[in-house]
Image 1 (cartoon, helix red, strand yellow):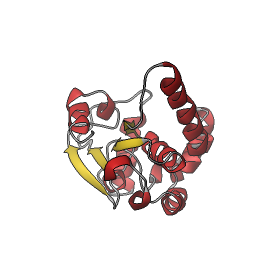
Image 2 (cartoon, rainbow, N blue to C red):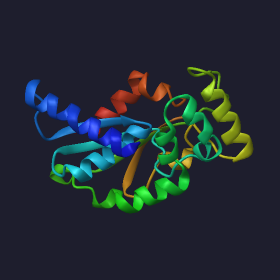
Image 3 (cartoon, rainbow, N blue to C red):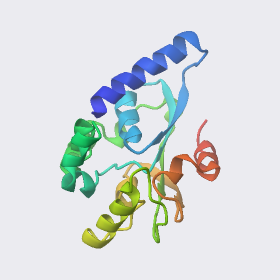
Image 4 (cartoon, one colour):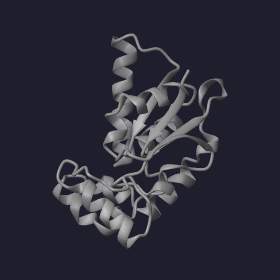
Length: 186
């Protein structure tokens, strides 16, 4: 779940702070559900994060979670799939609004999104091809293979880049994306 992952993130950051020289404030680049996890972490640990860039984060949920909740059982991610249903992310956004996050030095949150039109990537188990087909044909929305285009942005954050030829997984594998994200972080 987002809540469990936020606790794991806090534990990991504490290890980095205590044993590996990480200092506050630090910046976060987060992919997919990690963007929601990071937003919750920032609320629970104000003034520790200088900037946040999310990559392909379902800030408004994904219809795929609504349609394929059963898949979460098979990949041991039932709570995560439940959390990214559109209605549940709407509730999350009320609890953790972007415009009330406390980032150091009045920094902002930023988003980057992909767009998998003409998808030739299959993903780990075909999830990107299937997701792209369902989101494009059934839900009539541009998407990166898993996250609808309009869900990867949110009011209160600046969208700093669109990568029209990069699918959901490319957003964490391509150096151009990392460079775009890093350019906006302190």
